[in-house]
Image 1: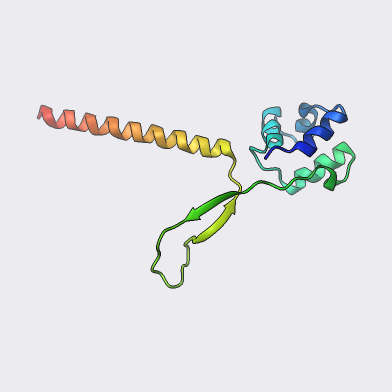
Image 2: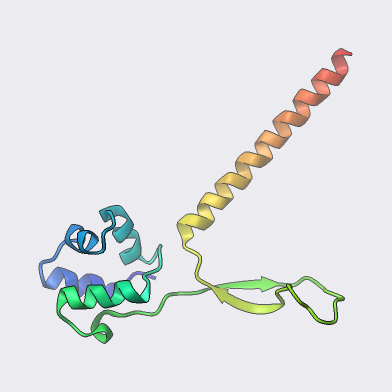
Length: 125
C-alpha cells in the first residue's frame, strides 16, 4: 500500500526522496520502494522520518498492508508444532514475490532442459 500521507507531506514541504534516503542512510531507489509500499518501513525509520519532516508520527504513519496466506493442508499431528494452519497475514513485498516467481519459472525451465539433455545422453548409449 502506497504511503500517501508520507508522500503528500514530503512533497508539500518540498523535500525530495533523495533527502530522506540520505537521512535514512539508504539509496533513493530503496526509499522509493518504501514510499510505494513495496518494502516495509521499520518503526525506527518512521520515527526518523517524522523527526526529519518535523511532524508527529501520527501525521505520516500508515499501517503496512498484510498479505493473506491460506494453508489448507490437512495435518494429522495432534500438537501442530511447526505447522501453519488457518489464515495468517504476512507483509511480503511484491517485488520479492515476483522475484521468487521468476526464479521458480527459471528452475522449471532448467529442470526441463536437463531432463531433455539426460534423455539425449541415454539415447546415444
